[in-house]
Length: 132
Image (cartoon, rainbow, N blue to C red; front, side, top):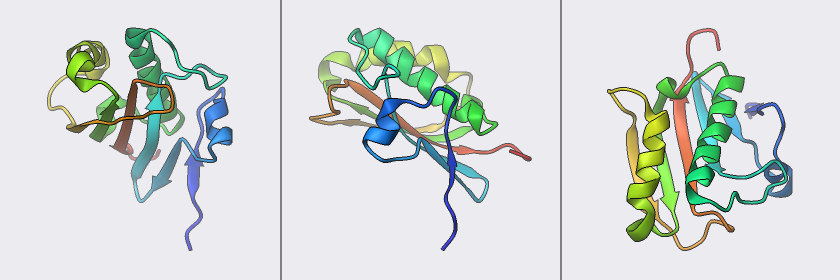
């Protein structure tokens, strides 16, 4: 069995230990990033939706950077939203601040009933740059 090559950002968040998962796993030139939420360092949700989405992207970008990648290296995105009928457009406006230029990654957006107190979660797969 291959050893998991876990990637942790600086300032490890409480949720990783509490829920027993790695923020990302590096494998065969790809980076599989666990769903990132707008959690503060103690694991609590950022209450404001716009700030929560921005913090989720910051947490995601910190993990990508720890692996030697950036959002431009992301090839696939899955987004989870608790209240998509009311919040999708607002979330998408904030996400555009981080999205970059075309060509964009593939995206699947899902409405869910529960995210442990969060309203938004983003999970990605990135192609690691050579040498990362």
